[in-house]
Structures are given as C-alpha cells and as structure tokens.
Image (cartoon, rainbow, N blue to C red; front, side, top):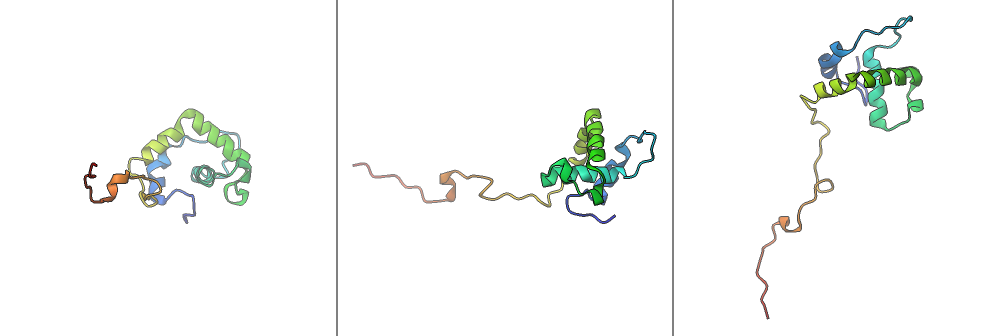
Length: 117
C-alpha cells in the first residue's frame, strides 16, 4: 500500500493490525481497518471537520465516525497509541528557539561585576 500524507506506515501497521476486533454487522465490510484508522489520522492531523473527510479515499464520514466512536469507547484507540509510542518516530521532531526559550543569561555573555559608586 502506498503511504500518503497523514497515513500510518507499513511498519506501524504491522505492529497494530492484530489489535482490531472482527467487524460484526449484517453487511460485509467495505473498507479495511487500516483505511478506517488512516481516516482517523487524517481528521486528527488535518484539523478538519468529520464532514470534510475525503469520501473517495476513506468512504462516508458517518461510517468512519461511527467506527471511531466504537473503537474509542472500547479503549482500542488508547491501546493502539500506547503500542505505537513504544518506538516513537522522530522524523518530524523539531526543537528550536521558538519552542524552547532559554534564560537571558544562557547566551554565554561575559559576566562582570558592576562598579559601585
């Protein structure tokens, strides 16, 4: 499967694919658990509303939302994220002066005593 923006990698999928319960409804499943999980990630990472989910890629937003609620309520999503955080991906990690403020004296300036008058 080609990894697209906002989607889980093949290595990450291998770690969690066995965690999903069998889907039990009267109708056969149209979209895989991976597609549903990628839809959750798309919503979380893009900040879009559920109704803005690309239907041609992820299916109906109502279906995705109901599966999200089911997995959220059973604690599956928490278990998945705990499993994936064991080996975090530092690819997008960035620390710079805009996110970590240094004390004014940490710049290395020469420290001298002021003359008292």
